[in-house]
Length: 142
Image 1 (tube, helix red, strand yellow):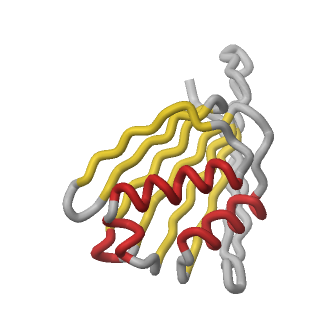
Image 2 (cartoon, rainbow, N blue to C red):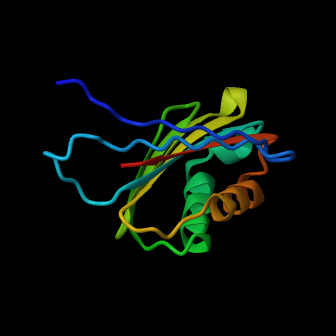
């Protein structure tokens, strides 16, 4: 059976704000699912020290959870040398981060089952904490 998901996009840049929204909704009503909000963030031009030090990265991610009004349950990280992957389990779902300090890049997924986040809150939190030169933000709604 063919999937008939709808995708909508909007673009802007952080210092002139580049943000995109992808809205994916299944047209197949035979399958029910809970509300899920999935934000994908790509941060470019981040200080490599913030991306290659596991403890520093986790502290910044924990601060972002607090700034976003989410509830941290636990977290786990792995250092690849260079680079870190970290997952924070939230009572609202999870946040995952993967870093490439050699290029100043971090990929983040923030997934919640509540309508609690906004583009503005996410943008503000991650720009303030990580200071990227460029941020790309996409939202997936299931």
